[in-house]
Each structure stands twice: as structure tokens, then as C-alpha cells.
Length: 249
Ligand code: PEP
Image 1 (cartoon, helix red, strand yellow):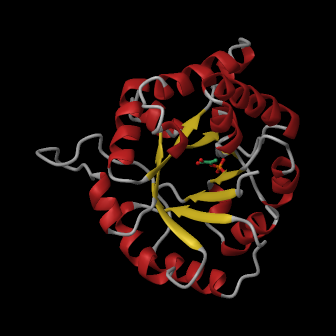
Image 2 (cartoon, rainbow, N blue to C red; image 1 turned 90 degrees about the vertical axis):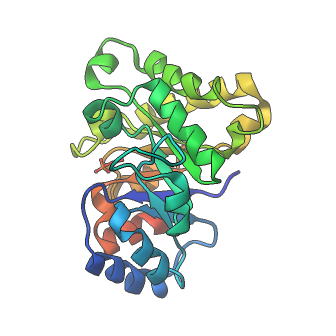
């Protein structure tokens, strides 16, 4: 079984003082022996987080990256820049990027490749909208998003991904997928990974995201194919996020 990963996503929230709060809160925190913890912070806080969290288990991540290595792309940030500032992971294909910023499957694949090229771990987000779920298309949508990336990668690159299943209707809404609903999709993702390679399916971490909080984390994380969480709102409070990390043991 892979080590669970709890990853927070601050989105466009937070502050330098919140970076310091997390440094203090996690410095002496008691965590389960076997859990990885990361926080995806806005670009301007990466460097401070890298410095402040050095003595904690918190790993620094970013929320997106350019699909290009360098050049005349005003406003963009490359994977190498993120790495230089201490990021180890980067979210790719979050539904807010797909929906609000028009990132389609091709754009998502290009960003996954850009992340891998500079040895950042891409956390690839997958998820259906409520309309798609109601139309019975959940698996088709989620597995389609997954295949669009896996088909574009080499056999040796695929195991370097982390996946996050995030039903769009559960993000920031307070409406969590039930453990059974989440497990059903995670199981389908795992089964599709088996079609590629048994060890890929076994080792790949598949996180659940969508209104995860201290009160529901334990039962979601207890599902056989849920290997961690991607946490938005509840990653902005030290105590809430810590409690979620503690329930991953
Ligand atoms: C997210 O932004 O990835 C997320 C899961 O948000 P929330 O936990 O607030 O639903």
C-alpha cells in the first residue's frame, strides 16, 4: 500500500502570516508515522513557505505552471521557477483551471509534461460536473480525462503522477461525495490503470477532493482505493488541516 498523501490547496487565499502559522502549527505536530503532507500555495508565498516549513513535514507545492520552459509568455511561471523556489509538486487540471481558464485535455497534458520535464510531481485532477453525473457520464468523463494524459506520456513517465478525483459539484460547496460514491469512482480509476499495468494501478496514489474536512476525512480515507485527500477550504486553518492529516494514519 502506498503512503497516503494529504495535500492542501490554498487557491488564491492565504498570507505570509498564514505561512508562519503553519510553520508553528506543524513544527511539533504529532502525525501518523506514515503520511505525506503538502500544501499548494499561491506563487508569491512559495519561497517563504520553503524557508518556514523546512523543519516541518510540510512539502511545498504550486497550483499551476506554464506549459513552456521559458520565453515571451508574459505573466506565466515555468516549472523550473517553481522548483527554484522550493516547490516539489504542482496541481494540474484542477477544475477551476479547466472551467474558468479554459484548460482543455491538451493543455492539461502539456502542463503535466512540463512538470515532469523539471522533476515536479504533477497532481492531476479529474472530475465530473453535476450535469455529467446526472446524465450518468461520471466514469466516461473521469476516465476520458485520465486517458487523455496517460496516452500522451511514456510508460516510464506514468508512475510519476499523483491523481486526484474531485467531483466538481463537491468542490467548495460543502457537499461531499459519500464514501461509497467516491470509492466507486476511485475503483473505476484503479481498474483502468490496471489495463495499462498492474504495478501502475497498485502504486498510483488516488486522492479524493471535494469538501473534505476533519469530520468526514476518516471515513473517506478508510475506503480501499482512496489514498489521500486534496483539501481546499479546510487547508486554510492549521487545526482543521492538522486534524485531517491525523486521520490519515
Ligand atoms: C479543491 O480546491 O481542490 C477542493 C477540494 O476544495 P474544497 O475542499 O474547498 O472543496
